[in-house]
Image (cartoon, rainbow, N blue to C red; front, side, top):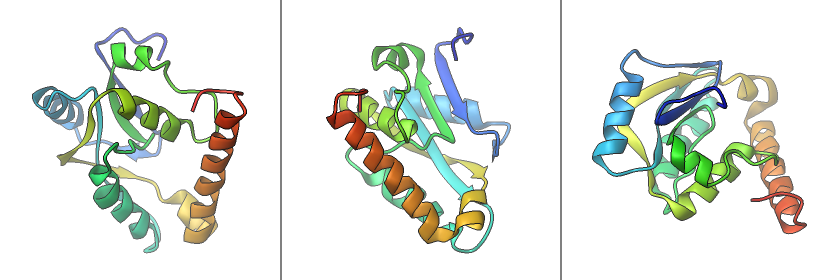
Length: 152
């Protein structure tokens, strides 16, 4: 990120696959809607139980007042990223970043862009184990923020 010099920053996990039109479509959507950051729909590969996570990301996250932008697929305006201090050094940093960002800037999901991401954690830990993993990280993030160790 530090070496990037563009107006927009794209954060994509190594196990996430993008279509060739990803950036053009997502940036067009963000700019047309006056958004500072956004994400897109996803298809999560792996076991059938990964479809519950996929449905949550695709149907619940975009409807939140302050959408959670998943770390495997987020595009943000560089000045906004810098203004909110980037990713904090806390557990579940992408969620913490997303929540901090959405308190100050408009964010959203582009309905016409789709990425494919790995369901490796669900395959390895099961759905319950995966949900427990993220709940534990979020609890630790909130505990860290409440003790003043780091920004939420």
